[in-house]
Length: 329
Ligand code: NDP
Image 1 (tube, helix red, strand yellow):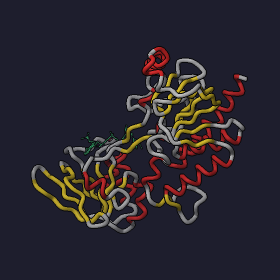
Image 2 (tube, rainbow, N blue to C red):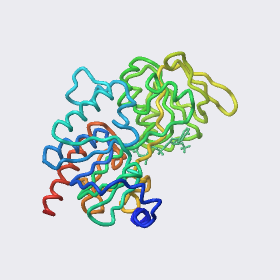
Image 3 (spheres, rainbow, N blue to C red):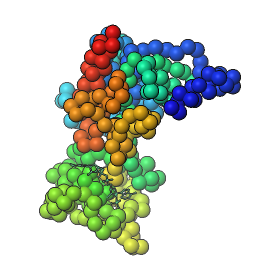
């Protein structure tokens, strides 16, 4: 009830009262998040005459805006850059009357309908239904050189960017299933893949470990951590630490696969999540445990994490929301 109390305070405390400007705006569908899931939900909800309002959040366009070329999204035979694809999706949603706005939903109250959401701490929205499409954020190591080469050799998605390293040498960091899967995927494209593992064992499932070990062009570097990624304009190598010794590898691509953080923190007071924070949905649907609240995209998908699967689930969320709203009318 944090928000409810906060809102109570806002209403009662003359100083805090100033924070909320004007009356609550009302909408049938509030979409939170602006990746492929959010915009697809907006396209469908707008075409169903629901006039959805979408808030773009901290990273307008979502994770795809940090990738260069997207070549695996159906309908773009020549590929498309992540930012252009997101602009296309936004324009398509707006064409049908969706309103895409800058702003961050800073609080929600899902205890009763209409649901309440506060934008940037200053504006109150009341929504008949909410579609959560807040995505997930790839974890990075936190090196400044990693930041410098993001989009120029550093990536957190082998399926998105691996193709650009065909025939080249690359490294993958991580010891879980994602790292194992990305390393084997890249091994099919690249000359050589270094798998950089900080412990002396892989945490991945047995089957994945066997697959990695069977793949001839993967070299597992146990007990190695990354000190720096090096290069001039693009990645040219990495300096690793192996129990106090420096080891330099020559690589063109550096893939970080140390996990993702689903952006569900705002909702966990009301919405059920799994141990890792992914929103739980009723099998085959986008329905959460709260009637009228739906989830789509990477915030509820710990497995596929692709733009096209996110878009597909955004479509489901809009169809589920449409059904929900007509059942209430
Ligand atoms: P995990 O949390 O399972 O693994 C993260 C890995 O990254 C660990 O090996 C961890 O090391 C390492 N790591 C974390 N931080 C750092 C760091 N700063 N420096 C170096 N290494 C670091 O994440 P995954 O994304 O691999 O998997 C998430 C979940 O999704 C898991 O449950 C997994 O089983 C599942 N999954 C399933 C797949 C499938 O079934 N096909 C495919 C992909 C994922 P350490 O071991 O030392 O902690």
